[in-house]
Amino acid sequence: MLYFKALRDGLSDLPHADPALRRQIDAQAAQCGWPAVHAELARLDPDAAARLEPTDAQRIQRALEIVRLTGQPLAQSYARREDVPITHRLLTLALTTSDRALLHRRIEQRFDQMLAEGLIEEVQTLRERYHLDPGMPSMRCVGYRQVWEYLEGRCDHKTMRYTSIVATRQLAKRQLTWQRQFRDNWPDLVELDCQDDTLAQRVLQLAQRHVTGVAR
Image 1 (cartoon, rainbow, N blue to C red):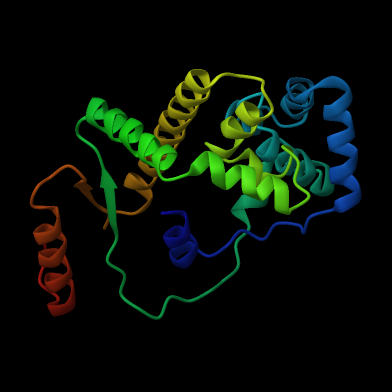
Image 2: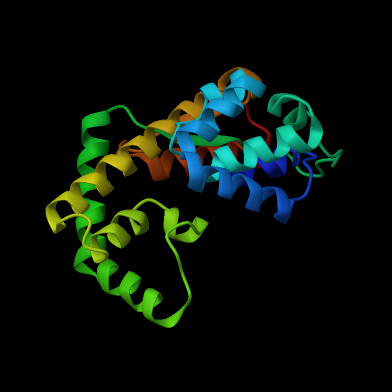
């Protein structure tokens, strides 16, 4: 959905990363902790901080970086967009869920499948082959972060599995919340239940009507 939004609305005109400033923020976090850095962001841009968890290091770092570089609230920077004309008629579809409990069960099943297919071995191999550390964005991803902690001996297998599933549920919740904001901004948005047995047929019907110009 994020990629489709970039195609439809264009990308925000944000400042490029500043390596020196990022190192400064990382050093501050190493000394005081990310919740303290989050508190500084809250002082400079309360709205931006309210949307981030105090432990969300990657997003806190980028938000604080932009605020410091521009001297403006994050929302004001994101509001500046490149002017890219759309040359196609877009069919705007979004998947949602009617049963949150079923979604949670599917998330649990999916993570168990990832474990069965070698997630732990994958992370172990990456650690052996490359110079990685847990502060890297790739290693902070949901699942990778928890497996890293398990391989470091900071939690047992049961805890690693549980915290990974909980983190994935939280990510799914944030994605659904993020998606809801487009209901008003995109009047042509059609939401589809991902648990509908007729989903594939429904999508094909909408695509055919879109091509022929027939109203849905």
